[in-house]
Amino acid sequence: MTVQSDIKTLQHFINGQWTDASDGETFEVLNPLDDSLYAYGAKGSRDDMQAAVAAAKAAFREYKETTPTQRERWLLRVAELMEERQKELIDCLIDEIGSPIQKAMFEFTKGLTMIRAAAGMCRNVRGETIPSDAPGKFSMSIREPLGVVAVITPFNVPLIKTTRLVANALAVGNTVVHLPSEMAPHLTLIFAEIIAKAGFPDGTYNVVTGLGHEIGDDLTGHKDVDFVTFTGSSVVGQHINEICARNKTPATLELGGKSPTLIMADADLEKTMPLVARSIFMFGGQACIGSSRFYVERPIFDEFVKRFSMIAGKVGMGDLRDPNTVIAPIISDRQRQRVKDHIADAVAKGATVAAGGAFVGNRCQPTLLTGVTEEMTVCRAETFGPVTSIYPIDSYEEGLAKANDTEYGLSSAIFTKDIDRAFHFARNIGAGMCHINGPTIHDEAHVPFGGNGESGVGREGTDADMEAMTELKWVTVQL
Ligand code: NAD
Image (cartoon, helix red, strand yellow):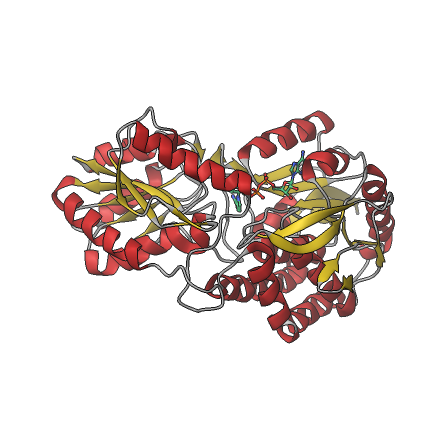
């Protein structure tokens, strides 16, 4: 990475070398707070992607023979180096994607956990012995790494996604080619410096930056890519799924959401309100697991809307380096327009804005909508901003049915004192994750994280990634 005046010029990281794009092309990375130029990224080409996959394939031959102790040591060193470079990582999360420091710190600490949990995986890549019907035959399964893993990450939680997926792939013996979001390349390149310094051999981790819609297919459709892990929008996920199906490349897809929260009349609102605010406003609502639908039992509906509106009016929208700031700028012009369109469409069709509703600079105020109906876009589509709809329900059964009336199925939550009802919800909600008396936004390194339907295929997390990123081989010995 080189710095020209104040503006950084970023490069790819391929086979342990920093390189410009093969044709010298660059693209602009903007600070979303004020659209000022943050960096020039290397605009990757098909040739760059080919070089990265070739490097990862060549490195795999030796890397797969490394011992668990060696990989564990490298990963633990990555965590130490991240701690040494904490300020730089945090500054990057603030200035490159507009993370308030509170969210940047959350990502940083989560990222460290992801790396350390991955280090623990190295010793757990296990098969089993299997009884055999054949006399004198000893039968077993062994677990082997797949080869080259393509990691594709979104802009909103680049450090969490990078640390989790790259570290899990490396922990079990795969090599990696990473295509980070074109809106967050720098963060990933700092991580690449850390990986190299920690001692991972050349070619085990490669980063090609650029425009996903131009070079993504060169990665996901590459014959030498053995696994794809994609996090991003459902539209791009569908496209990647089709490519992977054609090539029989296994993949996990972590996509968008429209996560519901049920608030039952017996919920303790004192405890519930701070948690529900956390479920939608963090990072300005740009979280896949944010709750964009609240179903509230009618006896407490008015009180809930009143309290939620008061909280929404007080959510911090100040300096990104102020620990009280929660609301981030919306990442891009296109995405800002989408948020504005969703609010305007709802208002035009009769919804009431109970709080917020307007933009201040590139930030959208925390926005609560009531009176939302089926024909409004915001009812079903992912907004990806600090906007949520609150619907009254007359019974738990109605709430469950409405919560399930969606193409998405990522996170979900219910607030109630009734444990039977809470578990009924957990068992019957069509989502990959359910939190009882907790916000939809929750993640840990070792849990099965992921969704159903339009929200994706497969799960992430140490155990889930180990299964997905390795293959069982059956081996017998005739004694
Ligand atoms: P996006 O789909 O626009 O981009 C994600 C990544 O895909 C980027 O790296 C981009 O360069 C790449 N890409 C684009 N076209 C491609 C192609 N043809 N082939 C391969 N890669 C391609 O998403 P985004 O705007 O960065 O992120 C927001 C979305 O991500 C939201 O929908 C959000 O819900 C989702 N998300 C999901 C999770 C989850 O775990 N389920 C987590 C975070 C974000």
